Image (cartoon, rainbow over all chains, first blue to last red; front, top):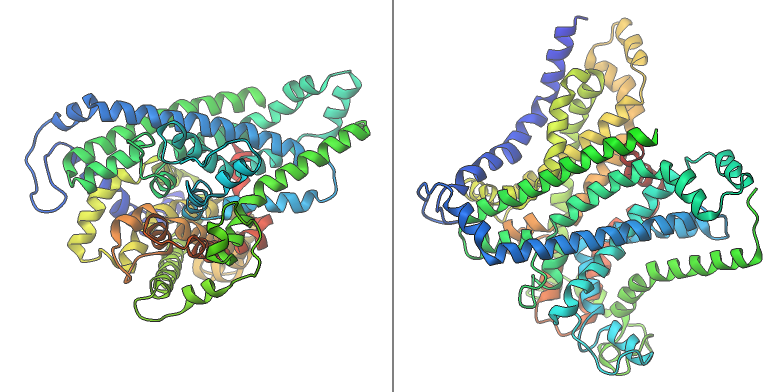
Length: 294
Length: 281
């Protein structure tokens, strides 16, 4: 069979997928770009061309800077904690002990739990009047009075991060565990014979095997965390006093609550650009790590 | 070999118990809340274990009486099943030929890379035109419309999984069938698809999990019992004026059961699917 026919056939087989992708991703993205230069409303007026007004307005608003800071904090702290906890859990699960297979099986549970159910569960745990956290901490005499964990700007973001970490660190653990199991036994044994301590064995023998897969997990988790919407919407809706508002929630409010499609679209594209830059920087890092680890 | 001092062994077991407790405690509490009488949940100090197990909330949510919490819940359950089923079926139908094409003809692979790169796009970047488009088509608050939109998430992911699945099937087997005179469709039916069946099944399960979990588009594009999915129904309950927290917990348990069961049964396949991307770098 000739190469051109193979290529033509491949395109024909991909056509249905590509057609649908153009319809539900390509066209909406292009239309978002168009809308971002207009003052269109969500319902009704098609809007007039306003140039870069929307971008200028959004980028200079204090809402945007504040939300960007909140989102960055959320992403950095929750992803860092998930990576650290995930690697520690993987190191533990890589040891031999009774019940290891069962424990490894349990790790799939938080991952499988729907995000909205996870958010609802933690919202109930943090409940200011009847929540389990307040009850436990009071009964252990750690706090004297019940607190509104999600109702105080000082604790709401931290409470969200805990809920997000609980759901996502097991996935990092499973990825890290798969990588750990690829470390040849004789290498760790040799390092032990050579007198390497636990820290040096981790740093110089095990970490090179972990680096590649962990970088991929880091990239995917960071992008996810930067786009975060669901867990925050269900737990706090961005409150109290907008202290937990993420970029995605800000776009939702602008485009759908206030029905300002034009400025909402410009804000959405700013977020997209930020995520893309992040992803490209990370992808370069992944290539470097993969190169140096090999 | 590694020396195992008793202290080290004890340390490992303490850590293992701690990890198990961290994973299980919130889940166990969700279930306990669902079967605790409302008075126990509102008691101070909180009663951690119900005096009598009360399963009536499950019956309440699964009943279909008019205008009850059950009617809202069962309709959202049905909508979730319909949307997840239709979107998964469509995603697999699109993904099998496309995944095969990219696997056998790498020169077209860049188009799949582009499709997968859309994973970076936050849904908010597509949501406004999608809303206007669905509205124009009369597909707002409609399970078909929502299933169509879910392809933005499901199709790239399943195609990528299918492609790696086909990669592991040697093309020589297909070539042999074709030399014997089988056409493309016949080769697929007799050789490729039976060999790829486990991958197709894994991809489909992942797609179901993704669709079951989806919240953002469902929140935007559905507005009542005709199309609201479970995630939206639960968020409504959690944010609403329901005074019985046990009822919210019960809805959570019921919504979590299908994916958790899939997760436990399919553990091995899911873990290899989840980690393959990571290990391959």
